[in-house]
Image 1 (tube, rainbow, N blue to C red):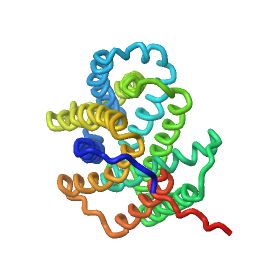
Image 2 (image 1 turned 180 degrees about the vertical axis):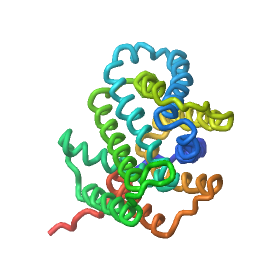
Image 3 (image 1 turned 120 degrees about the horizontal axis):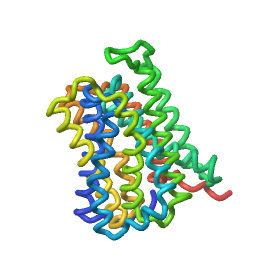
Image 4 (image 1 turned 135 degrees about the horizontal axis):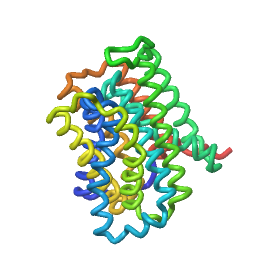
Length: 303
């Protein structure tokens, strides 16, 4: 097990709240994707988050960092927000909130693999085992769910699963790109700037695909919660948690998100996870724990 500093009660509370918020984002994607459409809902999400984060960035006196690194931050906005958010919105038309969150939990696995292939980072046997287990878990979970028949909203389960996996891979790519190009840049500048960049990138597609019938008050309320709470506030909590408890503790939120997503999906939408989904999710989380170093194999005995 990786050595970790003890977390305070405040940090633990923030960690649980962050897991609840990010788990809830899959519920609001499920609820809003049909009313808005993927591109329009993503635009509302990132634009709303930007409106919350930019004033905080100005208050912290970090607008200069955004101006200095805007090109690289814009790339993060594309790869870490615009593209994966659209892919998850597409998946939301076919998959349950809990299932999407389980596939989302593979992002650290793809990050480790991309770090090995792109940055040449060496992986120990624990992390290689985690990669293998995580990929096996994705295959097993997808095996009996990858139906090619389009559902009522025109998206098949197979397309939804592919979209989730692609989104998780984009998250892994963004993590490595940020590490390579934005090391030392204030995290809040990256968070706020990436949402601004994503909003600018999504404005055109949202305008072209904006629903003919304007979404009702309930749909707008859900979109506002997705933007302000599940994205803007969640970013603030996440970076504060990194600052106060360290990245090794903050990454533990990965293991809380699927559980919260399943809980919200069951409570609000009546989505009941089956035993196969729970087992597949457990395998993926085990792989993620190994790939991120949360769990390590014992050292080899000296011969």
